[in-house]
Length: 319
Ligand SMILES: Cc1cc2nc3c(=O)[nH]c(=O)nc-3n(C[C@H](O)[C@H](O)[C@H](O)COP(=O)(O)OP(=O)(O)OC[C@H]3O[C@@H](n4cnc5c(N)ncnc54)[C@H](O)[C@@H]3O)c2cc1C
Image 1: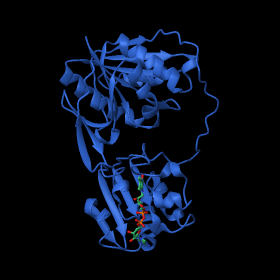
Image 2: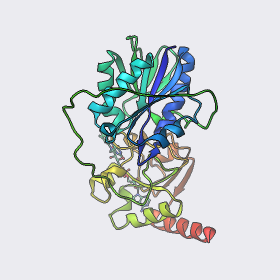
Image 3: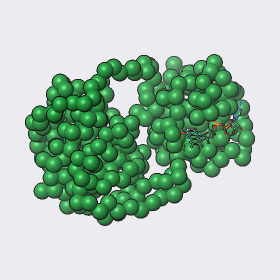
Image 4: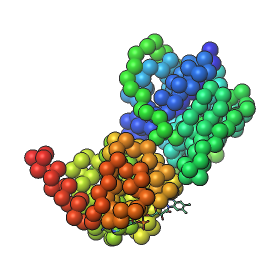
């Protein structure tokens, strides 16, 4: 039977949230293409992740567990993903459009002789939809090769929930060819807070926060709510926060349950990364700021008054 293959991403033994969004895309695509849904997971000592993947109503989990796959390289993972997709008789192979997906999937497409679409937000069984110009236009594309490869805009799809069904688990037995690249070192930003792409609450500050020190009030609110801190490019470019917190077209795409936008205007490039959030609360002194056009709740006020007040009230509520 042909299959739709979704490549899973995980970090520190935990499945990434964007993989669950990609699974939702995969389930829908499999139904439309009369295919089964197969998940490919790679790494080393990943039985926990592979077990978790069984609980989302997929047909098959293909596991590539090897010391050589412990650390991601586009060459190693891309090779195994393409070989596993061939074994699954894949007609469509997808991965969430994060750093890894963008890095690896073009390589997978070449190995499968497949046409590729990036940042896909919809599929009707024949045509794919993808955002263009910071999400201001939608393009309809057709991938005309028998095997199609896509990266999936995770925020466009709900996260897959637990589901039952008959699931087979297969080991991917592949000997890797002589590698031309090797993993040397990973320098991770160590933070007690969740990553904005994984968090259900994101508190974002913009140019209006006006300084690195002032970001403490954003951080305090994020910590009270167990959320992540985000920033606009203006705040990142000013050097107030590290660039891995940037939300937007050239930063991270997020769709949390709650997004608080404080002291930011809501440029199209920023909106491209957060407009799919479930509830948006905007705090801005300027009632004409474009962020209010997409906000569910708007507070026209000084953030230096509102955010500390919010934090105090929430702390009282908690204690
Ligand atoms: C190719 C390209 C890619 C880009 N990618 C991104 C991206 O990924 N992410 C991104 O964010 N930007 C991106 N940008 C930049 C984007 O165009 C804007 O310049 C940026 O988003 C503006 O950031 P801001 O809203 O913080 O600042 P501003 O637009 O200057 O807005 C600051 C806001 O703060 C309000 N304010 C000031 N003081 C207070 C206060 N005390 N209390 C309440 N409100 C206050 C002001 O009223 C104003 O609305 C990109 C631009 C380009 C050209």
